[in-house]
Image (cartoon, rainbow, N blue to C red; front, side, top):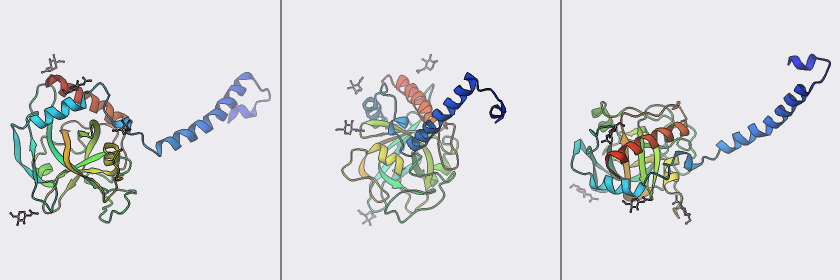
Length: 249
Ligand SMILES: *[C@@H]1O[C@H](CO)[C@@H](O)[C@H](O)[C@H]1NC(C)=O
Ligand SMILES: *[C@@H]1O[C@H](CO)[C@@H](O)[C@H](O)[C@H]1NC(C)=O
Ligand SMILES: *[C@@H]1O[C@H](CO)[C@@H](O)[C@H](O)[C@H]1NC(C)=O
Ligand SMILES: *[C@@H]1O[C@H](CO)[C@@H](O)[C@H](O)[C@H]1NC(C)=O
């Protein structure tokens, strides 16, 4: 650093020294803070009415998407249906369904305790299940709906009375194909108040989660392992607001 070479110590030098001294602990605090993720950083703005949108999703069951009936669990016979009532709205496009939420711990360095079925890759990268909120769709549906569904597309997941944003981060190719699955972080954000802690073996069994997928909208800032949660929330609030406007909520 060139200023150290000078012989006189000016107020500017004092300022530089002071800011270096201040910046060090600030940087430290910042790094520490990101190690525990604030769920509100990808939860919808409180001005968006989760209950109204949830009720609207449950009512919008006129248009079944082609070939889109899936089991919510391999060992029950309960199937759910993906609906396209909102695909051709004027300013926004989304499809939706109701399901449970099993926990997907694929991807890098996941902290899913008790999960024995972990793959190191997710379908479009190697997302970290404890750092990225994502939901899973059946592989066959993703293959058949390529025009309406981009990799990493935005979803608004309504769970336990709130809207949480996530991306379409992984597919399920198991036989039989099932639907209703989210990453560890999505499950934790959705069910913060559960008495049973969400982990790789404990999801949410009730089929009362609404998944609204804005298949054409992909947030910026998605890396191989990580996501820019602020960009996810910005796009999420924008799309949900457009949807709420069109539905007159
Ligand atoms: C949200 O929507 C519900 C259901 O339509 C309604 O009863 C409630 O008053 C709304 N809340 C706000 C804050 O507007
Ligand atoms: C599901 O349906 C199949 C075929 O109809 C039947 O054999 C099976 O016992 C059912 N399973 C359950 C858990 O109801
Ligand atoms: C969890 O429970 C607390 C206390 O009952 C409540 O204040 C909070 O809003 C709840 N959080 C969620 C996300 O439901
Ligand atoms: C779509 O957006 C345009 C431009 O903002 C607006 O004028 C129009 O009312 C919107 N349409 C609906 C159905 O909300």
